[in-house]
Length: 133
Image (tube, rainbow, N blue to C red; front, side):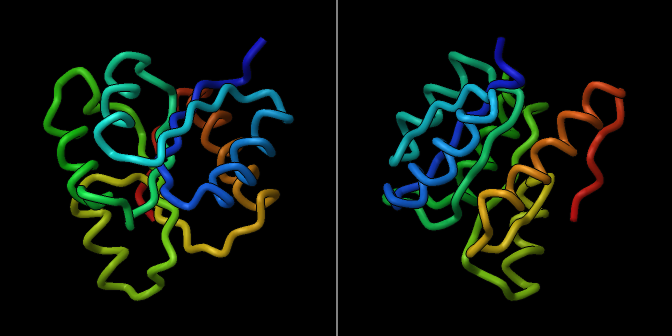
């Protein structure tokens, strides 16, 4: 039984594999996409519990992906965790303004990512919403 469904949009295949395999080994169902358009389609079809999103994506950046997800009533309530190499406050604020629920700076160990995800699912099962950080 899956501990939760996650869609992960990340164009760096090595990072995508590292995180997704780590999370799958711990019981999460993870669907990945390297490109935004197929990723948006997967999200709207599967309605996952959580979206992991890189900001630097080909063709459409992660900020625009978030805007599209939040503008769509079907996907607007899906929490989004941004995983970005951009560490400056202005980047974090831009992502928060676009609708992300958590902003995590890479490099991030798989174990640390797992901590954030497990905390999210614990809060969700208790009916507690994330406060953006």
